[in-house]
Image 1 (spheres, one colour):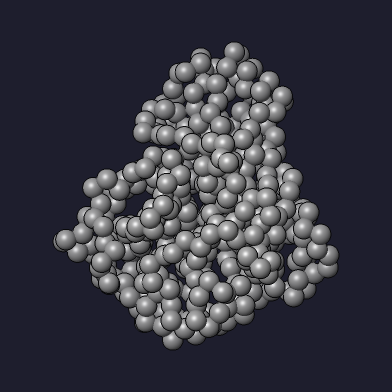
Image 2 (image 1 turned 90 degrees about the vertical axis):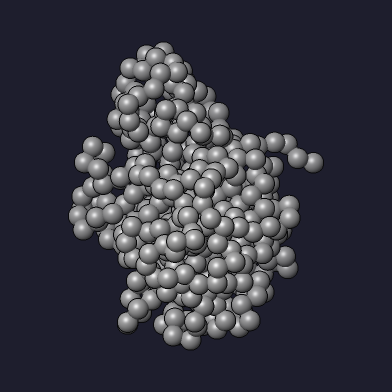
Length: 419
């Protein structure tokens, strides 16, 4: 932990309004942070992408996927496929993000300023060193892992702190990447039912030419890792095509999404049913509380004053049915033989109590990560937004203080030294 932060937190414990170990009555927004939309990274790229406005080294989209490394105030983040909805040859990368913290008021709402900074950039490639790209056109016709198109949407660090697992929307795929080199070091097999048979560079063709698999740009949006590092949990953004996803005019009509559990040592799979509050909503991230309970972002596709649904739910898998052998689901209604995940509201980001709603509220709330524990006993929870690489929009971060009473089951992710 850096000296500045240690001083800040010691001051908080001694002079703050909460004594050490006490619990507040509700989840508290303790501060916000942002990285300017015009900021640039360490990729070494120069010039503009094919959209003619975005710098090849422009920092953006990293709010799609962020994870704590277990070390001080260091996080890693994976920007998504770049600007213009896959129409550029943006090279996929991973960011190291260090977050400075300054206390500006006694502990409570907005008591801290958070200053995130990208301090390192790692380009992502396959085992042969070929770069992954966000380009729609870089697909493999067979849908295999030979494909070089990759749209990072979820990231988690393994227990050794040496591999970043990243989930993708295009395949969907789930890969491990070496945190020292950026090269792929593992391919995690996912259920075949998630993939489409006929990939295309044209999203409308993918919808019209496939009867099963993920919807276009609605793949594995969220990723969690169990506290002991033994399992990954991949969350699909919406229903699969064979699960009655679409109606007339390709309108989204299904309220059932699949959550996939993968045991890393054996490849064993389970699947669970997540009931969306509305067919038009999407799921954007999942974060482990323990090995049965998780936080999930569910939101609408509206920004600013038009935003109506930006929520974080707590879900529980302990009584949920394993649906991996169910080939298709109805568009609406949960079949009698299926017990969905249990689901309760945890944070409504548009609650007036937080003061976040309004013209400047971002559309794409997409990242979740627990951070270090404060001396008060509270755990920090980071919520990040994808700015879609718009230079005039900062990448925003909201930081909440989570009391032990709010998440009594919480288990911190275990990190260890590995040979």
